[in-house]
Length: 515
Image (cartoon, rainbow, N blue to C red; front, top):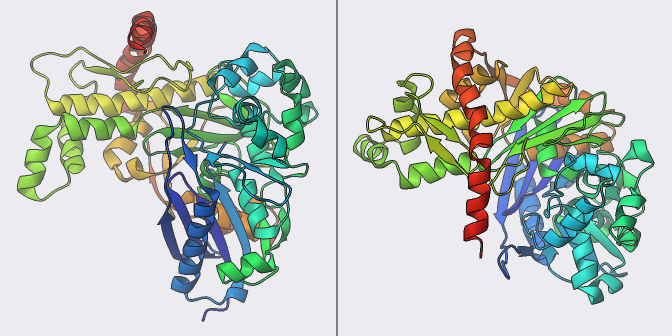
């Protein structure tokens, strides 16, 4: 067996747990993923069972360590991440009192409105706009208002990451990352925004949160004997304070210093970047104080539907691509990309607004919807596909432009996720935004980011920038094409003009058809 030291990352995603074993140069020895279930009791509600979480984590960790062929005592440190604002209530004996409220659960809409109505300065974290019902603060208020018995019996209300840290160590702490990004904690303004919670009539919620807040990578404690026995690891192995999965992804991409921006792609786009000065603007989340690096600020933006729109189009409106793919033994995505690449910039005058599930940034408009305009009888499914990719890239650029306008210019975009496999799509992002798109060796950012935090807890690295220098490696860069960037400007402006022209019509329609 290899001697190590090795680092273990545990990533708790929406659908399951992934564990990965890495060496200190960022090479992945092995990873194993397991899946758990989600229950949807009613529309807008989503719950998971923490008992099932732990069972999957045990299976993933044991599988990854075995597959890597390393001894338990060669694991020097453990780091963790999880979905954000997945809220767990436990009693004084650490027994879970009810199913966890998953991040996508939006039953706390009324509580989110109550927070937004306070007008408190803490709302700078939500871009001075609506508070998302996904966040942990309104969910905790929902427990108090609607599951009073559980709230009263709860000794701790915690986010998923901190539940896992407790399960590993027996200690209750709260990640500064979760506290800042989903509960309005602001170290620059004295910590917990008591005035916000008091104005919302929810001051007692603060008493339920873990009292000890820790920065990312701080050693919480050693692995407990009980957890070590179940996981097949060594008792006392250092366990690091963790963070939100998307933020672990940014860390795993090496976005731990100003100038770089993580673009985490998938069904949606999430942008995360670091700034040495605070940045607050309508339509952007943050900047969150100390959320990744102590003394720095993390800004976040996002598009609600990106890869999901592409998948929708491929599955419902692309018969020719499927026909060609079937006859040639290729993937329909490859056909769509190849044919769309033959078309001119602007897709022959076809514009797409990418708000199929509303707009997260920069408008924070849940009632906005997708729009195609400029259609003619000469357009084909490949024109429509190219317009979709262009519209997504224009939406990304509108967020970058908002950041630039408020003093944060992204200079280099580091990308991960499924869409990053498409050079056609990534070249378009580079051209539209006129910034390089950078790709790292390990595309599974979250478990690498968590392993990096484990390395800090183990004393192998002093901080995240040092860990990134050792464990994150660039393998490819796509440079922007200046001529293409210039040609895109007309169509980008047409995209920007679409939302204000259609906003009232779309909002009225959504209200009309709402049940």
